[in-house]
Length: 218
Image (cartoon, rainbow, N blue to C red; front, side, top):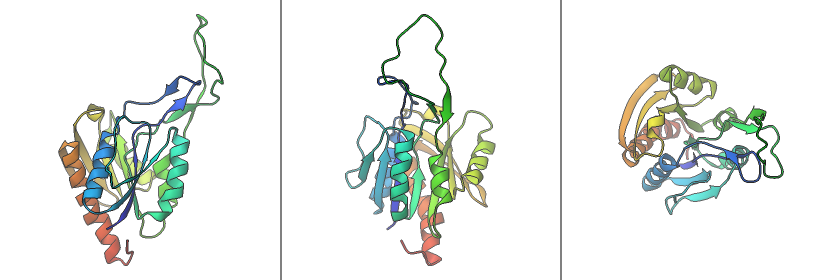
């Protein structure tokens, strides 16, 4: 049994009190991974952005809204867990300054400066202790394999799961899996529930069991 931290869903970055930047992530993959990890007997904490779904009853759920809130919660929780599965799709940009009141139409173009939000997976991976592991997710629309491999190395992930925009909001998905030092290690396709169950098995085999054999007990 391992202690697994999962991030799930989108985040929101508010432009004003009623409008925000976000993405189309539904949280269904995070929900499926959570259920699979719980079913396998692991102790699971989920840090979730705003979603219209519920997570497995055995999981502890922490609700957040913004990318910085997700990073803050994850930074507090990660030291108490054996590994991270970063399924969330945090918003990559936020306004440099959010308006304090609703932005009204003027008939003119609206110019707003955006700045990057922190990279949650990379930040946590940089701080991992010996024996901890990190699994990242990458959604790419072009040069997918190259970019997934680059992200895996840059973010210091032990595994990277690559998917595409066709899976957003759908019941099914397709993952290409890459392992650090081994390259492409498999493909998973089917319902998100089926794919999540196979992903947890792969994580158990390649990361959890290996760490235990190396003396890093969960």
